[in-house]
Image (cartoon, rainbow, N blue to C red; front, side, top):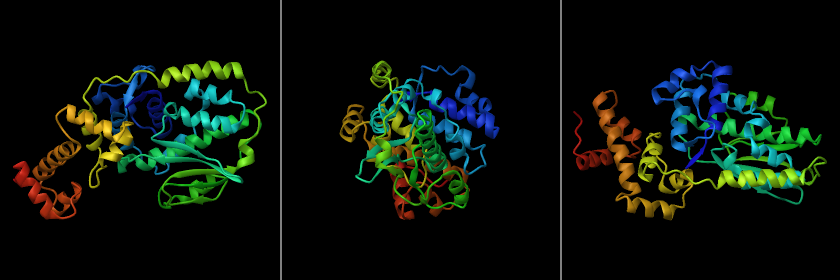
Length: 327
């Protein structure tokens, strides 16, 4: 559930430098300072999303994520980038990248689809809060493109992208993306997909280094096998994640996937904590209902939609169960 703080730190620093986001002012209420983040520390995924949501409230550029992802450089990935650079060919680099993808700061799942003529790197985004979803998807896609391009150019073997799928409908800013990507873009897909000629993945890297490969592989193994600190119960992490959503909440399967826990394990651990996913979701809805009803700014229909109910009657039934009144 925790991952390196570096991906967030690089993102926050870029938002400060290129988009004039008052990062330290935003982080201060969370007890954080960009200059004093421990580079060896871990960050809970749900907390990282909460921090990004706070930072992005100060960003008005709808393509900021794509611009920012294109600024990620090889040194920022540490031993992970060094391992990729020491691979014998692009195909092996793809396999290594997928195995160690948790070191790449992504909010999605990488996979490689090898075909006889064309092959593709797929990035399937996780269920993300709407306020940050497009920014994160853009950042991760542009960052992956940049990482591939940097490694290929390092060996004077650029990979020619043939097609790029984007995991959301064509936006008003489509012309910007099309000016940045040297290939046709297919919008509205269920994942990002980077398609290239299969022969390009088989090219040998002339400066591949088997000694360096073994060295950095050992370091990466240690990083991904580091024990996960469980300073808070699982239910607390799930509540933090669910509170990031309104209107349409993730189900237990999406939540387990986000937390990188098998669904059966998640259910079992919640039972051990004396609760369930349904109870936690009900708690989030109840607390949200109290807040929305107290504000008096929304109609009951609007409150129902904010809580993910398809009809107002379901909200009234829940309010009776919670012993919550309109006030």
